[in-house]
Length: 120
Image 1 (cartoon, rainbow, N blue to C red):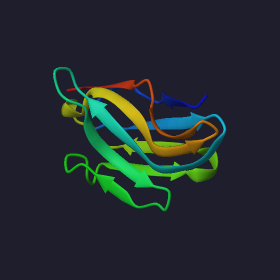
Image 2: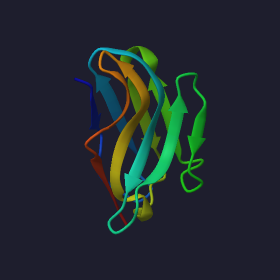
Image 3: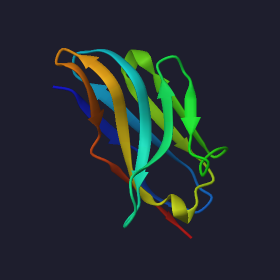
């Protein structure tokens, strides 16, 4: 069974930093794109950043210059370094693995979410 397990969320003051990690477990052959999404209370889930297996990245305008996404293909792990955090970054952050090829076939997977709270 494939699972995405996130870690690294928490409470931080505005201007601070956090690093999120997400590891995909199971018998995995490849993952096309991995990414982070977030959902604040009363809002829709939105894209934060994505990274392909080749290292191409994409960021939401609201986090450009502050967040950095990276991945370790050998460990099937994606990271999100978040600097200069703002109160509006407060949300549940979800990890996503798009077009993950495993013993179960090709599918998309989501993590359970990790809370990030930025106090002013």
